[in-house]
Length: 594
Image (cartoon, rainbow, N blue to C red; front, side, top):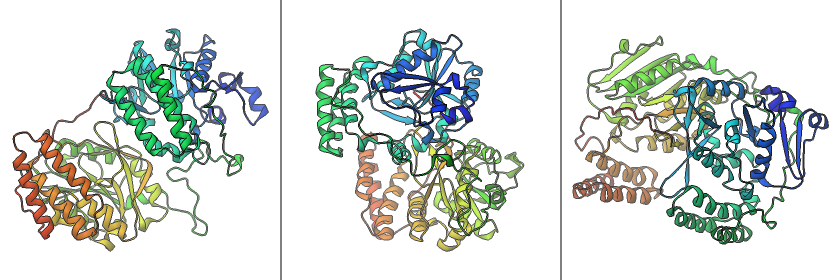
């Protein structure tokens, strides 16, 4: 409530607090100032938001309702948000907007399960269509409620939010995701990310087995209303998996009962399955502002560690950063990457582009940026391994404290470098900081590749440069996941640092040479470098399965190539040993988020 009043600027009489049975605010004066809607019993989020929306739109002045769960402050959404979001919606030119969510999901049509989606920036109003979302912090239009679309109180808890957004779309309205918000909190969209944010304050799934009942039961209703028959079979498989992973026998019983009641079509509140665990006792004095948007640590705001004095700000570190960009036959992607580097809120001191035998050659004057740009060209395609080895040698030859490492098809969000440096400044010599990488389909990548990470000059001096003899594949795993962490510098994912991966060289068909280098380098890495089995059996199985399933007309050629790669990997024969065709930039893919 304090966040809505003090940060978002709501007038107290424009805030409706729905108390679901017992509870309320711990500040009597605050309770008097806002509008309290006390329900006689706990009707779940479905019933609570049903009554709350009716109360909000009972006022004829209300055009939008900002529907909030009470724990949204713990996810640290960008703030202030509401006024700017409404302005973006109304100026975007999109008709019949029913709801705007903070983070979105799309259905996988065959199975009906959902995947998190984080759209790219640059769309009208920074808004993009999605299928469904959790309640989160959502704008809901009056037109939706006037059309009779309200949360179904009979669902109580579990997929009641998905059902609501499906009915919003079925009524002819669009459900959009706030792209700026979704990208900033991409790390919170997974179940693990949300649990990590809430576990010290609120109960999570492992603490409340009753949730499993409604999740198992209500998916049957969701499928009957909005899905297809194949969803039932997939739901039974997922339910079996949930039984296997259940935290307790109570959770297993709840899941089984939910499946039975869902199959029978039973809905409503089951008195056996209600919340019993309340809010956890705060670990700190609430007067400190911990957990209040605007009070959390951000770039350039953290307090110095005891005895260390003032920490350098990202702005102070920025001139000591050189952006290293590796490029091969991708002029349009390279131009987007360099433009995004130049548009950072904290800019690097210079850019070095390593031109890996592009045709035509990359010229610094064609990149059109005010930042100092130098081009280092190799007339031979050295692959990403050799190209990055050359790039890091340039870092070692210079005086910059940090390298910002980006493939040419990486487009960093404007705050990316500032956010990374905000983390790096705590221990500059140990800086090995990674953003999250949004893929063309909107999914979130958290692996350590050449996707816009920060690494200190000190680390590269200590561990050396990437191994050029790998040529392609696993050179990033060897360097980022093995060699640097083994030297005592763990890879750190930095919340709020986001890049877009355009994947401009992913063609429809995998070139034959990729099968060779993938099989060779994967085996070499595990056998000669890591000396452990690790994930090798799973990966080589996937590689062979891909050749057998996808490569019609050349399965035998692919299998022969894989065997050749495995032989060379086992014998330790590296370098360019298989001919490579030049790769070309593919048209940029901007898929519909649905």
